Image (cartoon, rainbow, N blue to C red; front, side):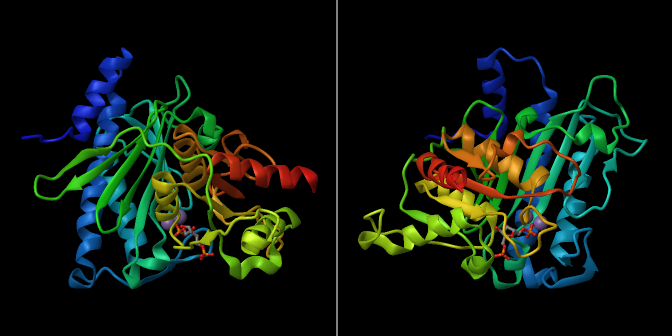
Length: 335
Ligand code: AHG
Ligand code: MN
Ligand code: MN
């Protein structure tokens, strides 16, 4: 009988294969995985345990928080703060960074996360997820300040997401490819099910919120118009469109069968560079996508090279199949 490789076995074997000695990162990933398992359970119970609906509060970005936004934030903090692997955390749902409480040992990593991505979908039972990114805390710093988190995405040592869909999945990179694990609810373990995920370089599927079309910049409008024109247009091929409104679900589709996902800069609110957050949405997803052979850009620069200026900074996101992302970037260059 083939039992499959558990997440823990995978992390130990990967460390051995790479000749690594750090046991803190695998242990931190395991703590994060525990939080994702707990969340998977709570989300699956939904209305039965009264977790759907609004929390009646707003986050720092002025978005209404769902009960599950708040709960998932608490679950992640509780699971990750005790191990002694972290010096601090930051989350989409907390105004300021979260220092590790004095009663717990401090570690060498920083954790940034979006505890519940796609939360507008939670009440209608559509897939949601958790996104996370791990940075190294600067040498000698035990009480990190916001400035210590302001590292470009290229500095990430690990990124991943959990997808709470028909199955619960954990997709992970530590900079050595991308691997997907499926939660076996019977034994409570994530089991390796899609090793070494690769994004096809070409695609005929795009994802964008078309209700923003009137605010798009010229290069994005041109790209989408050409896709929609299909066989009769300049691309001479028909394209398909998807929009789940859960970035985790969109990225997972792209990792599975290719595609391009865009939440570009637009003219809707000139004070915002995009909708998605650099530190806990764009950077981790870019790391994963690039590790799987895809590309990611703001249209003007590689996302992982964007210099961070704030925890909740927003950024334009164009990611997925390499050749299509490069085409959109080329359209931006042409103006
Ligand atoms: P969050 O639920 O963490 O605020 O993120 C939602 C994001 C992302 O998951 C999705 O791609 C996008 O917002 C959906 O935006 P629209 O509401 O414009 O569809
Ligand atoms: Mn999100
Ligand atoms: Mn969120």
